[in-house]
Length: 248
Ligand code: URA
Image 1 (spheres, rainbow, N blue to C red):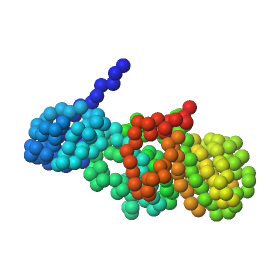
Image 2: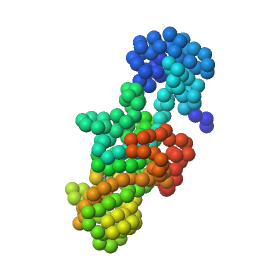
Image 3: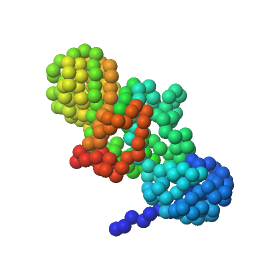
Image 4: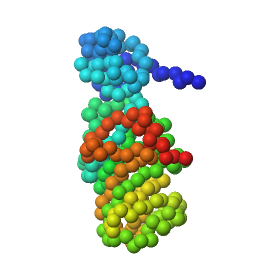
């Protein structure tokens, strides 16, 4: 069955992308600054098909249109920023273009990384995609590079792999997780669920303390080596396939 392509009134689309209030974007459109396929589109009530390629066919004040709804991106989360809309201080959203913060539907993080965790974070305005990635049913693994305060004992990998570990204050045991030793105080840990501060609490449960934490992979999607802390890029269809590439 073919999926129908949603259409939207031009003024509504631009207002929902954060270009201004409905009245402001009507002004932009009337002034001839919205160009579609090389021609000024001066009717705010004109319906346009909302597909990803719209960003290559439309310009607003000479700049390519922002990605239409259905946006998904990867960002290299730096240390010290928070994955929240509400808290004060440095927020992950401040690393995106200012206009993107006024979009409807809003862009959210796909799960969270702690303030003091760096690495690969996905963000999207697509609720169904977000749910598919975080839902335990889809088993999207996430891999972390862990640095510890004290040398590993040698039994951690077996304890984590067995599953059943109970974290303090929780009622449900953990799912099995895979740990690989990288050095005396370094390991990678791959999780198949996402509990609050899970990696830090798992190592606390075996008597150690995490001093640095970095996520480098979601599914089979790696954080690109050339994506600097704070930088982001849109996900391609191939990237999204990689996210689900290791899933059952
Ligand atoms: N586990 C943690 O402890 N922190 C994170 O940010 C992610 C996983």
